[in-house]
Image (cartoon, rainbow, N blue to C red):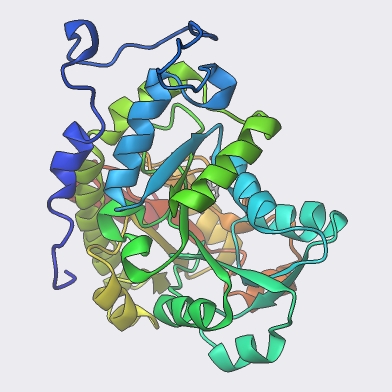
Length: 388
Ligand SMILES: *Cc1c(COP(=O)(O)O)cnc(C)c1O
């Protein structure tokens, strides 16, 4: 276990932060405001026109206040998906002619956005290792404006030198941006460590039930305001019913993520002792290259891990076919365990050599640990490793 538990108060915030008091119409649970438009404000009232595309119905406003409280942000914004959050952030912070520094091994959608769409708009990206400030300094140019990293990388679960990233950005006037999806605010709150903007695919842990896509941005009020105005024009607002589901899912975030931390720790320990498993990638294991950093920064090591089985692709496919509990499907962060082979899913577009260079063998298996009883999950993994 990491040594601190600074996030305990988050459970109270998850339930109460941002909730209207007294409750609207006496309703204990905020209803879905299924109304595209709202009455025009009178003189002296809040001047904002309310319209779903402007992300400002009561369903959006309660989420903004709650999400801001969770990461101690000045402001927050929900979006139609994690990619909508990432696109709105980068299109707000960067202009044609600007450059950004990006960590290598980014989430596939983000990699495509940066290296295809933003490139077409004349925004260049320098891909760097998350651990090498000397290299960052060598690549810095007068037009470099931002540095983009992920808290825990997929699927090898590396943790960059996040404190050095913040210090480098402060020294050189760059906007520091972090995708905090894998950690969730229960395990890591980037703004407490000096990041300017934190963003999430709320599809994953924040909602936690694999039944919507949504995104979130938290950070400095001036930046979030600029991102909101860009998002208003891009039209990627979150539907009120999805707001309602995200709001409901958030209330149990603390319970779910702490359970998933414990489950993944137990599964990682089991796998690392199993004779058929040749490698386990989990930052909670002492053998993980970033374990000490993760222990210092995080309140929990998260529910994501990956591992290699002796016998390559054939052994991995047989293992997946023999599992009874984890569902073989992409995505992560749900209450049910989900398992994939990244070479066949998230990293299928890359050559085997490029995958291997980033530590993704074709037989690597990625597991998103759900809230099932850890002993049941381990028993299932054990029988599937034994050949079903
Ligand atoms: C899923 C994911 C995204 C994209 O989010 P969507 O909600 O699918 O648009 C971005 N970053 C990370 C780390 C993710 O896991």
